[in-house]
Image (cartoon, rainbow, N blue to C red; front, side, top):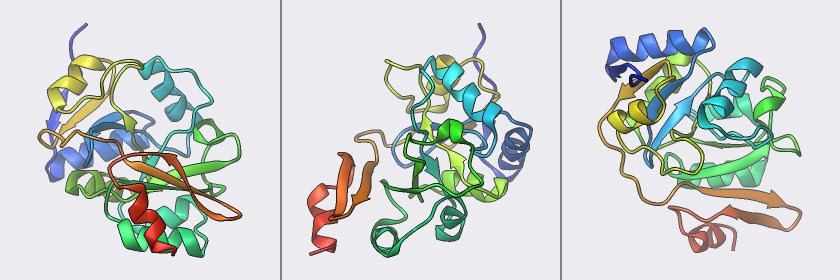
Amino acid sequence: MSPSPIDKADAAGLARAAAILRAGGVVAFPTDTVYGLAADPREDAAVERIFVLKGRRQGIAVPLVAADMSQAQAAGVFHAQAARLAAAFWPGPLSIVVPASGLLTAAGLGADGTIAIRVPAHDVACALASAFGFCVTATSANRSGTPPAQSAAEAAAELPDVDLVLDGGPSPGGAPSTIVGFDASGPVLVRAGAVPWDRVIKLFE
């Protein structure tokens, strides 16, 4: 099977990628950690296609990236502590678990109706969400059980059925985004990652 088509992450490429997303397609794109898979998180079929492409069982929450805080707030409900965390660490590799807004399809949510959102420190990732006009999914671009793609060529070869790969150069790789949720006592570490947990804790001391 031939690799997915690759396009430059310039204005024209971003416009084509956004059009594909609006049509229910899936686009691989670079982030500040690894390459991710973008789809419209409001559409059942688009989110379900991600699971098929990755060979991953459904029922696992799919994280989102936003262009900015305003866009994030359209997809999730940010209480005061969550907003404080966003102000301290965005843009950057820290995802915040918040209750999902009614706009999102249940296909990509956690069992408790939550979603992990972040604003990445990556111009192309933010520009894609901005061009699309809403948050996009950002699960890693790989088949389940294989390493995440760190370049456009890797993403295209690993996932030949993706509709488009935006080439924004190699991603930094390394640790994934840290994921932080909240319970009645305050912040809870959901997944260790690029932002050290002690930095999060210090914010709430």
